[in-house]
Image 1 (tube, rainbow, N blue to C red):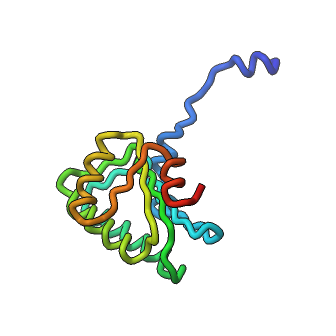
Image 2: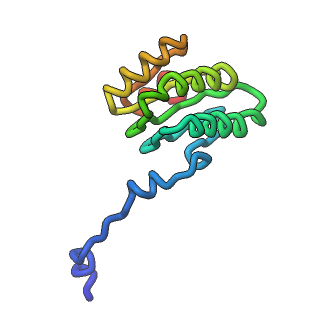
Length: 145
């Protein structure tokens, strides 16, 4: 088979969405000591139970306690879903980890609806609702670009 024919041949789906959704919670949380930056990748993540909220709190605590200082944080909320009955509980957990571990935090999502809903819930808890529409804007907001 020629190279040209191989290129034109049948293509197979790359299953990127399934791969993204298959990330464990630990794989979604990354700390970069050089930048003192914690990145939370909740793209495609769904929170449907109180237990998941506690797992997030526990994972953040496990990763950031050894750092010994507060960190800058960026959260990717693209295609994130949160069960409506868990909004209060989730934002209370967010307030807790922000107060304990973050020196600055910004969030981003392309979803205007999520920016509005999550922003309102965070404001009710006196958590700064910095939710931008792109990663670049979120990085600029905390001085990391």
